Length: 321
Image (cartoon, rainbow, N blue to C red):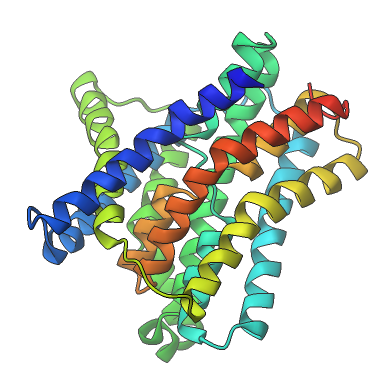
């Protein structure tokens, strides 16, 4: 258990420290709101699209293709997203915060936190390269679904897009740089295209920019406020992300017959903290930056404990590999 706790802390602590650095820099006047605004634009328009493209176009989508497993993960993510969106639309009084609440509640850090945990579980701790490859494949597929559904979510709640009806929403999604990155990545993967070395190195360098710059912007957006409606949304969204989503995913997957390595992957992918890219999308597409930044910080901090606890408990119960 200590090993899992150490790994979780080692993965999540840089996120927390970088956000605290952003908070410090903002308080000292080293950066301001314009820096945060422009930083988010760079990440949204270039950093994340390139990162998603890199993950998808380099993934081996045929190495361990398990259709029932991928279908369950895909349907589960879409279903959880739709149910969360429906309930938020019915129950939340502040309609302007719905997109930010939902986006924070279901978006997992698939590309940054997920792979290291999978490597520990299925390479170092319990050597099983086939299951590891299956987990990485699931990450690639869920990344596509995650960014696509979030693009629809924000387009539907965008007043400008809604004025033009369904066509406006479709055009808003189609113009999203992240969706474009997803589509280009899929095209490169399916057609077997590769980037020349200089271009691949540029893509890698730009991908590495996303996490540190985004977390500095997160820290600069952090604010301490009294308990109010928005802070209530933050707490509920955090609970949904790190407690309700993973536990319900494991229960449903178990009832559908998934065991061992497959169930372990499902648990990890649903127990991850909120994605950095989810915050950036909120900041750029008219969402609430306060909700996104605060949920991101809370889930990153709590996941070091919750991930370790879930792995330990499900091991003891004999559910996981």
